[in-house]
Amino acid sequence: MSVKQIILGILSWKASTGYEIKNEVEYSGRQLGWGKMSYGSIYPTLKELQQEGLITVQESNTTNRITKVYDITSKGWLELESWIEEPSAYPITKDDLLIKMSFWDHVRSSDDDTILISKLEERKNETQNLLNHFLQWENNEVSTIGRVAFFSMDYVKSKLETELKWIEKTLTSIKIGENLKAKDPNNLIRKSSKRKQGSLEINDWSEL
Image (cartoon, rainbow, N blue to C red; front, side, top):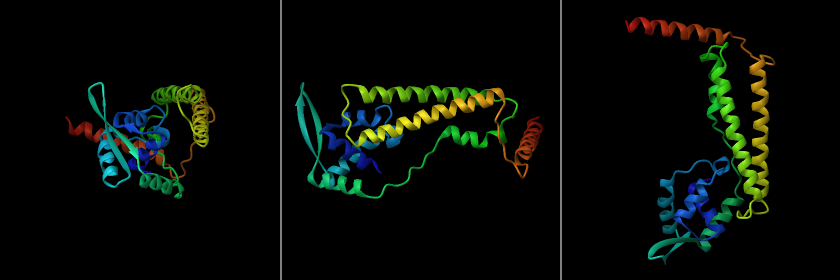
C-alpha cells in the first residue's frame, strides 16, 4: 500500500480537492488501517498521478477563488482495481508502548511500576476514545461506509475492545501483584541491573 493507492481510493469515492483529500487522510481512526501519511506527501503524489494519467484535474471558480478538483481516470480505475486484486501483505505493527514493555524489566526497577501504570491508563483512555469514535462513525448520518468496509470497521472495533480487556487485565495484575510471569533462564534481568548500575557509577565518577 502506498500514498498513491490511498489517494486513488479516496477519489474512487468522489472527485475531491486537495484539501478534501487531506481531511480524509487525517480523519481520526484512519491511522489504524491506513498508517500515518504526511500532509506534505499529498500534493507531490497528486502531481505524479496526473503525470501518469491516473487522475485529471479541473479548475473550479467558486467564491472568487480558483480551486483544483481531482478525479480518477479510466486508467486510474483499472490501476486501483488491479491493486485491490493483488495479494495483501500481512500487517506489521510498530507499537511504542509494547516496545517499551519489552525492555522494561531490564531498565526499570521491578519494585516501582508507577510509570508503567500511568502509561497503561493513558493508553486505556486513548483506546476507549478511539472505540467511541468508531461507534459514532458507524452510526452517524453523514459518513458513507461500503458493504465490505463495514467488515473492516468491525475488525478495528474488535481489536480496540480486545486491547481494552488486555489493559484492564494487565493493570489489575500489576496493581495487586498477582499473575505476574517472568522467564529468565540465563538470569539476564539481574545481570542487566548490575550492568546498568556499574555503568552509572562509572559515569558518576567521570563527572567529578
